[in-house]
Length: 331
Ligand SMILES: NC(=O)c1ccc[n+]([C@@H]2O[C@H](COP(=O)([O-])OP(=O)(O)OC[C@H]3O[C@@H](n4cnc5c(N)ncnc54)[C@H](OP(=O)(O)O)[C@@H]3O)[C@@H](O)[C@H]2O)c1
Image 1: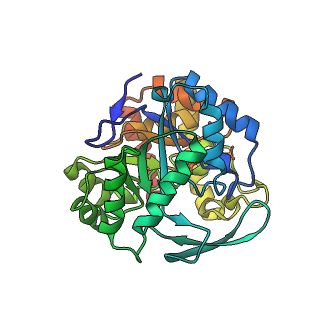
Image 2: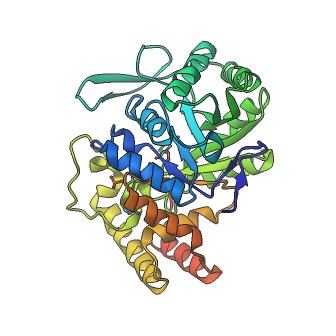
């Protein structure tokens, strides 16, 4: 499998990454642990050896499941990307939103990336992941209450100590990236990006290209809406935040269904699926080191890994672009 370096770091990743948010259950209406463990092992069997997780995904659960699934695998056979800076235990940091955990307990989320907290979070992640280093450690969300250089100093210390191989951020603006780069060599910015969520192309992508950083796109399948499986009458489990997604509003769903019809026809002609086409399209975009694709079971990762051997011609890409613009779907 062709590997790519994340930014200027020496961390090499597969073109597709196993996204481990949904397997934490929280915000996804729960998750089956056995399916999740099997999915991660299947991912490695298929050569998709890069895994992206975070402490907040299921409040430790996603990291623990990843650690459990990989505990017998030699450490240099996979790459772990995890995060820090989402605080659900104290009121420290910038208030973010209120939520409930899977047992219904109310939780107030804060974005917090003070130096000592970041160092502690790294230790907690290493323990849950059953490893002694993290390949890419990323700030999950910007924290307006902590100076950017303070968080970056924590990353520097962790790299010096050999606990992380590279540092990255998520959801940073172009200005925040430039500020952070004054203190440390950032490898990547992980941002929302799909055929129909293109905001990062305006200034985040040019700033990343200029700095030699990689973009790690998340939610490339729009959390399942870009696979063609949802429609206006779709029902979701309790706690699945997709029930209130903008795609469930009739105007948006109507446009999305038209795009799905175009993608379905193209996929049929290539003996592929819509998810595979969507992931291939994302992999082929500029500045991308690896596409983060969520999966909850072995069948989904197997289907998604099929995108690795797919190719899209320039004509097919133009057709997709034209359909998206005609439908006014780009945001
Ligand atoms: N840094 C950040 O702030 C941030 C934010 C979001 C995500 N992320 C990362 O990016 C990863 C990917 O994003 P995402 O999980 O939000 O969205 P996504 O990859 O667009 O969608 C993943 C979901 O779609 C469904 N799915 C996956 N493969 C499918 C297939 N072949 N056919 C039909 N449905 C399929 C699954 O959910 P169901 O089976 O329940 O439908 C899966 O959990 C996350 O797992 C996480 O690691 C990071």
